[in-house]
Length: 237
Image (cartoon, rainbow, N blue to C red):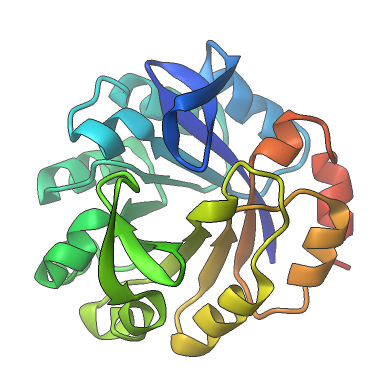
């Protein structure tokens, strides 16, 4: 199981949002690549990168920062945010991105996941962002009527390689992970599942270590010094 530091990019800076809200942003670095280097130097074995501009608007000028991150570290990097066509997914893989994350379009057009997975086998993860158990879309600004567990159950058939399950209500809030929801997510699919949202302490990591997860994304707790990456990795046992 991996502890996966998050590097969220908005306006070319490394930031964190509270519950995905644009107006509740904290800037942690003017250089996303420097943040990636920091986590790699501290022992990270995997990185999670989100292009927030792409997620919100579909358009982004953060490609250079994503490329710089991949070039700056020698560990796998997964990237999501605004991946709405095959060309963009291919560009990310060409940069050296290990896994491309598809969010909104995966729900609205499941055949898109199948298209990407066919063209880029082993490279496509799906972001399952849930609010009260229902899948949220469009940069978390809208909630669908689809149950997250039902969505997860269909991903393997589409050719997806894994899923990132995020509890939006807890993301960036340091309120602890939603253990029951994550347990249900793991049970819903045979694909590797990465947990995201709310991890605030070593105790949260210890609680999640008992689930069959591929990894645990940690963001604000690391940036705010609630725990170190070394402490989080040690808590996996």
